[in-house]
Image 1: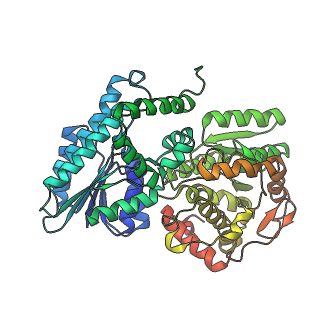
Image 2: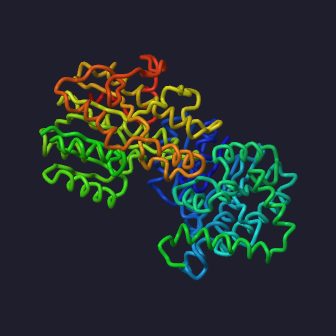
Image 3: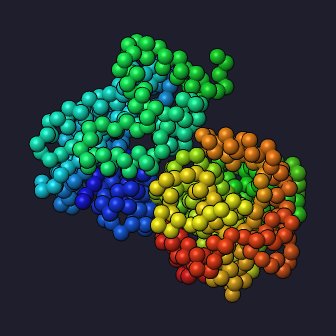
Length: 268
Length: 283
């Protein structure tokens, strides 16, 4: 069983890599950060007796992805699973962020996922079932002021995942779209969860459990996974309430959160 | 002047222990994660003891590379300043987390920092320790008594409970001290684990969630870190190695029944594999 993981040196990607290695899957890991990628590759190799390949790549660069695929072809690898984990967000309101950083959110989260998915689907193991996991977000369910580009990029992934799943019907393949709330992926995210107070705790899920369940559900053929009963309730509410209302509510909440978290010394 | 190394010395137990030992005439090499906080801690120690020798090396001990690089830098420092001899290494840096999170190489963070960082640093500094007949002191906790090592899932990825992970990491500290004594007594290295008691520190402040909440209530009943620092001083100051394995500031005390030679040896070999090192080659 060969699994490709993008963003494998970040919080969720790393947790996915650990769980896959524990299950005995052979791994092909990629990440933009070469030293961090080497660290997780070596760390897993010391713990688990599985084959682990690692190749750094910037998924926003089409030529880089071509080179990555050339390396995969050189190794003669064919995949059974693709975990599209690579993704970014830069916190702060639209005009507070640099233009190119905002563009980069879409370039990695959406374009990067499209590039890799397109390329790896052509390198699937032809004799076995194939699974793709797309990491969307709870943020995809609503228009989110102050995280506008991020939420929209995740909405793109949610709809893309669902549509691709339909296209692949009959080809022994499944696409699972993961829509997590908070996950304790890194210190910055933990700080954001803390700044949200009770709401942060309610929407945060245990990463190790989400990872296990995502893999299980992907193989079972599930289309979408929203971890946590509270988050599923939010999802239903989001459908029932007009988008302009949710946007206004979220704007109020995130303004407070970001004041506490990003600009703690600023006079309101 | 005898040299000691102490990790996690920018606040809490580490800072007060570094201050106390500097005041008692030890040359102190200390570490912390943040360079700015290291400088503030050094200034604070020098304010209490203006003639003290205190040097801070910033390093993020949750990163394997940082721990190994740090031990190389400290070895160079020791060669320069104290003929390569290290009197004591206090593996004190620790954290409390509310959620499962991994280090760069995929290890659970509390296990990696509270225990494995000390394992790596001791490995790096073992030549200097054996040269001086040095001591290794692990900051453990009374909470280690309620724990067992989950051998089939050391990183506790199934049913992760942050408190269980903390307790296990502290049990590992005591087991490591035991293993060092079992393996390297002949080299003159002696290891201890210290119960600092319930201490009013910042360890749980950033944990958030349930751990942060519980800690904010619990620490109100804690003793000041300067009091628990005495437990470390009691083990560093005597010329002869004090007896026993597990100490608090009043003296030797009973430890968990899980601390057996078998468990200690097993953890030691697992840790060598996790770190990709082999102690034998060095010592």
